[in-house]
Image (cartoon, rainbow, N blue to C red; front, side, top):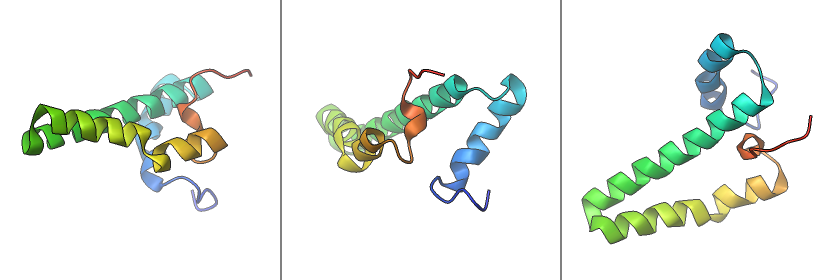
Length: 89
C-alpha cells in the first residue's frame, strides 16, 4: 500500500472485500470503480436536491460528471483508469 501513492487508500480498502470474495479481475475492479462513481453522483444529486430542489440536484450531478477533475484523469489514463469498462487483455 505504501508504494501506490497515486490512488487514495480508501480505493484499495473498498475493493478488498470484493476481491477476496470474487477474485482479482480487471473487469471486476472497473465495475466497482464505475459503480462508486455513480453512487457518488447519486449522493450529490440527493444532497443538492434537498437544498436547491430538483433543478439544483440535476445541475450538481451533471456538473460533477462533467467536472474536469473527474474527466481529465480518465482521458489521460491516470488515477481512475478502472473506470474504463472495456479493455483488451
